[in-house]
Image (cartoon, rainbow, N blue to C red; front, side):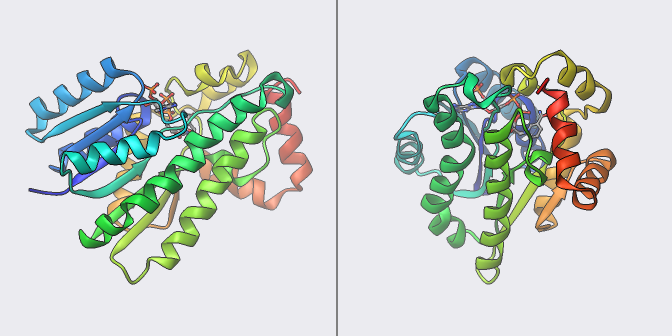
Length: 259
Ligand SMILES: NC(=O)c1ccc[n+]([C@@H]2O[C@H](COP(=O)([O-])OP(=O)(O)OC[C@H]3O[C@@H](n4cnc5c(N)ncnc54)[C@H](OP(=O)(O)O)[C@@H]3O)[C@@H](O)[C@H]2O)c1
């Protein structure tokens, strides 16, 4: 049997579509997120449609100790993991002071701490299963400071930098690391982040579908690319951010979030 692909946040949005792409390629999947109903529905669809094993665990990855619970589930069920997709994540938009320190820390736990902890815990198994793959979902926000999404953007810069550094470290192990940076994508992300009308309207003009983002991400994963920005507009955006004065990129972003 092929090794499992573990996808955090695999029941909705981009993660759901990444799980579909991997199931299409006959990988059995493990889906982990909070909402049991969407996990159960997607696991059933994947096993019925593609004939792969699909298991799920309903778990809040923002809570302390969640990674250990997830690892205990994997070990006690003897799931052999060959692909790790760190996709679960969310943003908190608006002024930094709108949220408590705990709100920010919980978000940073899901976006940064859990991917690092899972990578650390699963690396021996991934190395044993080489060729193996890690796909980390960063963001176009990783390429600049984003006033109005300050902690979120910083968390995604972390994901990108961590991915690139780790990739180099693992180059002789048969474990490949890829970071994918989506721009605006038509999922529940903007609603959960509470981005406001102006940012929503701007996003709608350039939104990609989660299916398109997932197809690009999974192709990049199997082609062992270090990093991919999804879509021409987002690639252009990252190039302009690199080219233009930081202050200009930051004030443009700030105006989107009403700051
Ligand atoms: N959509 C965009 O515009 C965009 C742009 C750039 C990057 N991204 C990144 O893409 C990734 C996927 O986001 P998306 O666009 O697909 O948004 P989404 O539809 O809101 O999906 C987020 C996923 O993460 C899971 N998740 C969130 N908090 C969690 C928690 N505490 N514990 C466990 N699972 C949790 C959600 O599942 P449950 O709700 O069931 O827990 C869901 O599956 C995120 O890392 C996001 O930062 C998105």
